[in-house]
Image (cartoon, rainbow, N blue to C red; front, side, top):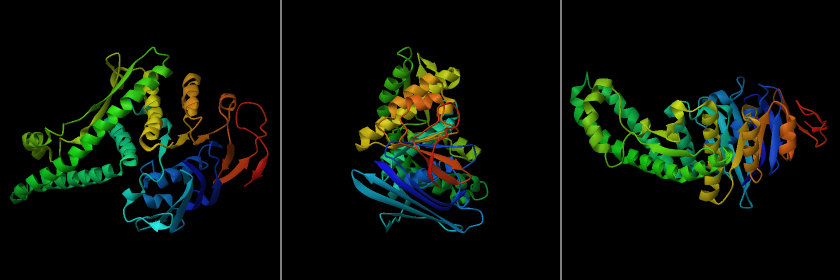
Length: 378
C-alpha cells in the first residue's frame, strides 16, 4: 500500500494543499511550527479517524472557518482507494471511502495502515502504563476492527459503572444494577484482554529479534503482557473488589489498568533501564509494528516519521533507515544533514514554510543543514 496524494482545505494552517507523494521516501523539511506535522496528522486521521495528538476535531479546522476537508488517495493491491473526511464545527465528522459514506468510524479501520513514530514514542517504555495501552489499542484497532467494538463498549461500561459508584451513596436503591454493569464489563473486557495477550505474544518475538540486531547481540529484550486481571478471574475479582470500588467510587479492576513489561537480563527496563536501553526498546517496538502489519495483512504499512531521526544516535538511525527501504515513508525534519543524504534514498523532498509546500529538485547543494535545490513549484 502507498499514498499517492493528499489534499487539504482549511485544515490547521493549510488553506489549500495538493500534495503528490512518491511510493518510496518523501521528506518534508523546514523550520519548526511551519506545518510539517500537520500533514502527518492528516494522514493519521485518514487511517484511524482521529488525531494522533488527541486533538478535538474542531481544533483541526482553521479558527476562522466553519469546516475543513481532507482527501487522501492511495493504492492498495493495485486498486485505487480514496478516503474523504469532512470536518464541521459543532457537528460530527463525515467519512467516506471511495465515495461511500461510512456509518461507523470503526468501518474506516483497515483501509489504510500506518505506523506513526514521533520523539514522544521514544519515551513509551519509561512513561506511564496509559501510553503503552494506547500503543496496544491503536495497533489492534488497525489490525482487528472487531477489537474496536469491544474496546469502545468496554470503555463506555467503565464510565457508566463509575457514574453509578458515585451515585450509590445518595441512591442506594440502585445497588442491584451494579451486577448488570459487572456482567457487561466482563463480557467486553475479556475480549480486550484476550486480543491484547495474543497481540503481545505475536509482537514479542519480533521485538526480541529486532532488539538483538540493534544491540549487536549484546542484549536480549523480552516483552510481556501484564494484565490487571485474566479473563477467567475477571468476574470473581470484580466481586471481591466491590467494597474497595465503592470506597474509591471507581472501577479498580480491568484491562484499563493493563501494562506491558520490558526486561533485559531480568531487569525491568521501565524502572531501571538506562535511557539508551529504553530508547532502543522503544525503537524495536515501533519497527516490530511494521513487520507485524506485513505478516497480518500481507501488505506494508505507510511509515510516518515525525522528526524522530534527530532524536536517535547514528547507530540507531542506521537501523531505522535500513528497515524502511521497502516501505513508503514520509519523514519530517528541520534539515537534510549529511547522514540522511548519505544513507537514505530520497524520492521526493518538500520544503514547508508557513503552510506552503514546495517540491525541491534532486539537485542538492552538498553540506549539512537545510538542503537547498531547485524549486519545482509551490
